[in-house]
Image (cartoon, rainbow, N blue to C red; front, side, top):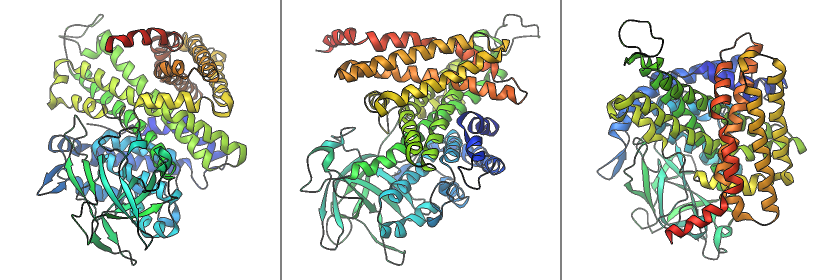
Length: 592
C-alpha cells in the first residue's frame, strides 16, 4: 500500500527547489518550516489512509452511466467531501474567496500525494483548481463573487472544455459557437470530447469553462472566446437555479484512470431550458479566450507533470516491497538459506535504483518549476520577469520529462514483478495504465518539445536559458569542490551532460535564427529529454550536497548512480538533435 514520502517531499521542497531560502528571505509572508511540515504531514496521512485504499475500487468499478446519470465509484463521493472539508481545494486560492493563499509549491506537493493515492480521483480537484485560477485571473468581479467561493471551497467542481471530434490540439478549427443575447449573456452550441469530470454526482453544480467562436470572430485561434457555463444556473442570492442546456452524452472507455469520468459533452441542443443554447458568461474579452485558457492550461501542465512523479513514486514503492519479499534463485554472494530475495539480484537492483533516480529527479524538476511560479508572483520588475521566464522554460520540461518517467518507471515496476506484474490483481499494471495518458493530454509531449524549442529557448534572446545553464554549472562546481569520494565520477559526468546541453541549446538557437525551424523541430523531443536528464543529474547532486551539509549521505549513492549510469545518454541525444533531421526526412518516404 502507498505510503506518502513526506520527509522526501519536504526535503526536496526546502533544500533543492528553494522553499527554505524563500521563507528566510520573507518572500512567502507568514509561512514557516513548521507550518510546511504540518501541511505536508496531514496531506500525506490523508493520501495514504483515505485516498489510496479506494484506488483499486476506482480502477475496477470505474465511473459509469446509470439511467443517463454519471456515477462515480463507490466511496468516492464521501472521499471527495472529506477532501473538500479538509480545505485541500483552497490551498493556493485568494483569501478574499475563501482560499489560504499558500505557495504553489505546497499545492503541487499535495497533488503528488493525491495522485499517488489515486490518479483518477485527483484529476477532478486538479481541474477545479485550474478553473479557479482562470476565473480569478480573467473573470469579472460579478463572476468572481458568484462562483469562486463555492469553487474554492470545493462545493462545486470545474472543468476545461477545449477538444472537439475534429479539433484536437489545433483549436483554431473548432466549431463550437457562441451567440450574443441582449441581456449580456451568450448561448453556446457544440460538442466537446475528452472532458475530464465533465459530469458526476458528487457536487451539486459543475462549472464548465468552454472555448467557442462568435459569429463575427476572426479565423483561427485569434477568434476564440472563453465562457463560463454552469451545469445549473445560479441565482443572485447564490442558490441553485434551473438546469442549463448541457449534458453528458457518453463516457469514454479508457486504458486507465477508470474512476475519472471522461465525458462527451453536448451544449445547446434544446434538451434543457426554455430555448436551445447553454446560457454562458464571457470570461475576459471576446476573441481573446485562448490567452485566458492558457492560465488554466499552464498550471494544468505542471499538475500533469506531478501525475508523472506520483506514478513514479507509487510504482517504485510497490516494486521495492515486492522485490524484498519475492524469493527466486540465488544472487551472487548470497549466504542466506534457501533462495534469495530478488532485490539481491544485480539486474533487479539496477531497475529499482533507476526507478528511484527518475522519481526523485522528476520531483525536483517539477518543484523547481513551482518555485519559479511562486517567485514570479512575489517579485517586481526585472526579478518578476526573470522568474516568469524560468517558470515558462521549465513547464514543458516538467510536464514531459516527468510523464515520460512515469511511463518508464511503471513499466520497470511491472518488469520487477515478472509474470505477476502482468496479472491485474498485483496492482502493478494499474500504474502503467494510468500513467499512459499523462504524456498525451494537456498538450502531447511532442507539443511540449516544440513549445520548449521555438518559444521558450528564445526568451530574452536566448540569454535566460544560458543563464540557467550557468547556474547549473555552479552546482557541479560545488560537487567537485566537496572532494567527497562517494561522489565518484559525478562531477565529470555532470560536466559532460551540461556541455551537451549547452552545445545543443546554441545549435537550436542558431537554427531558429537562420529560419531553419524544421531542423529545430526535428530535434525538439530528444532535446527535451536531454534537458530533463541533465537537470535530474544536477538536482540529485544538489540534494546530495544538502544532505551532506546536514550530516547525512544517503543521497550521495543515488546521485552517483544517476551520473554514472543514466546521464551519459545526453551525448547520444545531442547527436540526434544536431544530426537527426536528414535521416528523418529520408525515412519519411517509407510512409508515402
